[in-house]
Length: 435
Image (cartoon, rainbow, N blue to C red; front, side, top):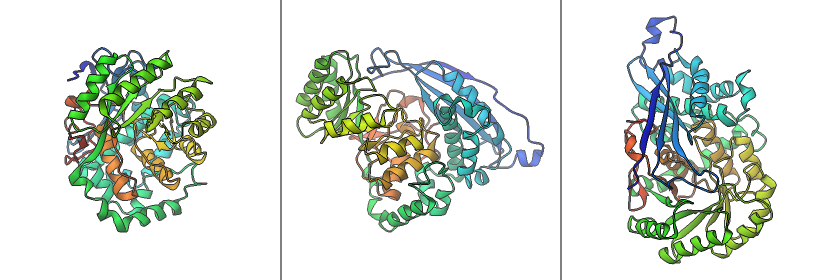
């Protein structure tokens, strides 16, 4: 089993100016302390490698919130090492205004709060709505959702499902997507799915299907990926993903055939090029991969190239084009979805501005009838909650959720996968709190 080694746990004091009213400051549910933590893990040799990231160091920029009753919550975003400290610093700056705020009142209008944080008149210049500043917003947002769920004593998925349609709408900032997703359309989507929710609640007992990404990191040998594929089948996975985009397309194609020979014709096999292919190689590679019957081709070219993805979607059919790991915000997702440039929406709540923007993008995808299968990095911890909400509340198809379990042992409430399925979490919170 993969074992990661903690590199550092550098807790900053992070505490900002005290609220003027000590009674309010110490009230239950009132945020009284804010801290950040730069936490990094080295992986075993070859693990986590892809076509463009040859030496990853799985890292979390963590925002820690403590309320007046001593309840502690954590929210994270994900990086590959260098720059994680920058994200922590930005998150501390953004979170400053939250001290002294009551979590219930804060979350009752989080959409407006998120808009204000994302549009800080000076820090906005570092984005807007992308890059390190947006990653920092994700950590702050996710910490607030974690505190909210802990305050209510509920796992995040249950908290979200318990909200009224209007309460859910208040969590969202619809800036620049109102042209295709106005508030009325959101309420229509939520109301349309509500009468049949009970039909989909069986997932809570059955577990949410998972697919294994750790089978085929780019630096693994042919022998290792074959053995990993066999092990994945033994652990109940019937879907898995292989990293491609190496310097030799024939190597990529050979590796796909190796895994297919191991898992047989009925297993679902995806490939991920991590943005590596340029033109005209992207066209050739997508055509060749589609002929091998892969379910989707992930990030086949530059993540900002909407028109390029649209061209590749035609070339790759019936294989689908998937993307989202490096699509930074709801506006860019709107453009990809409206253009028909992706057939699988891989929005990641640690890449966009946190859980609230994840929900907005999920609603956009539902509007365009595109399935949401999140990119998770190594944080299926959070997304196991969000896919349950998407399936039950939005009638998003129950397909599967990415599994990269390298760091599971370091979380207080680690994701449990049995027989290839995520088990429904029952611990209050969003699942992001580290041991």
